[in-house]
Structure formats: structure tokens, C-alpha cells
Image (cartoon, rainbow, N blue to C red; front, top):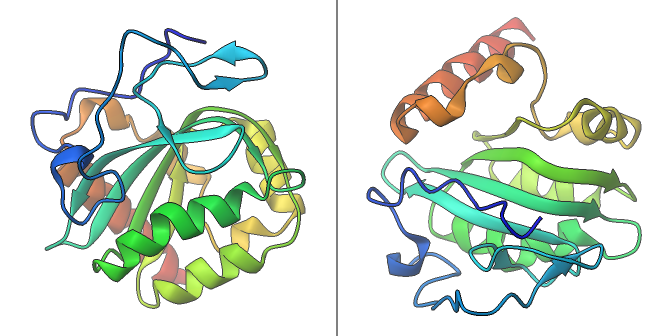
Amino acid sequence: MHDIEPFYRWESLYAATDDKRSPFYGKRYDFSAYRNDVYGYYIHPSWDEIGSETLYMKLLFADYKLQFAIIELMGEWNDTLHNDIMHFKRNVIDYLTKAGIKYFILVGENVLNFHGSDDCYYEEWFDDVEDGWITAIGFRDFVLDEWKKYYIDYYINFGGTLETVNWRTLHPLKLFQTIHSEISKRISLT
């Protein structure tokens, strides 16, 4: 797991460490030592801590004019034991919503498991974005199945054509436009 890095193709376009509105502004990375782990396996030092023992992330891109952020996640999302959604909401999402972000794209190819609890923080996040949305792409099917069991699908859009988006080949603005178009279609159908 130590060689799984966050997506870095957009680093020339955006770096959370240079963004004064990012919770990771000014952070310095030590690539000579691996300190964080998931399941006892060290993870790459590029992943950012959010206060959880098992869930890490990388803010890949944020555009405050268009009000969207793309966040890649890594590890085990465990609301049962570690209340990961609380850490994620308080230590990352709250910063971004206060800065005007109301559209969230979560990338979950490296989320290895999900253990649910209640949906209070998801509901709060959903309420915070009002006329925005939260969407998830690239999550494993069994994670999405667990989300459904805990009614996370009430708050986060996923599945269907969202699973066919080849996000790594797109510019972040094109990815946002693609997702925004799809979510707009879903909203207009309801």
C-alpha cells in the first residue's frame, strides 16, 4: 500500500498546500519517512491526515469561482469505530464550504472498506451545500452497497453513468462539467 499515491496529474494546476482557503495550506511533506498506516501497512506520505486512524485524503483540485472541489480518498472509511465522517466533515468539508464550495466530487478507488453508523454528518453536509451536490465516483461496488444500507445515497449521488466517467483522462474543469451535467439530469427527473 505504500506505493499507492494520490493522483498527481493536476499538481501543475492546483496544490492544496498553496491554497490559503485549504485546510492543508502551508503543509510540508516528509518523503523520507512513512508514518501513517492503514491495517498496519504504511501508506505513501502524500496522503493527508484528517484526524481518522484509517481514512486519508488528498484535495486534488478546488475552484472557488465555480465552487467545486475534487477529493481523493484512501483507506478504510469507518464510521462505526472511528466516526470518520465527523473527522472528514469537521476537518476538511467545513473549511471548504465556508470558502464557498458547494459541489463535491469524491474519488474512492482506494477506499478499501466502509463501516456505517448514523447519517447525521452526511445530512448536515447535504444541508450545508443547499443548492449544490455531493457525488462519488470510482468507489467499489461493495462500498456503495454498504452506503445504501445506511441510506448514504440520500445525500451522496453515485452509481449509474457516474461509474463510467474516466476521470483520470479529464481536465478538472471538464470533469466538473461532466458530473454537473449528469447530476442536473438526475435532479430534473425527480
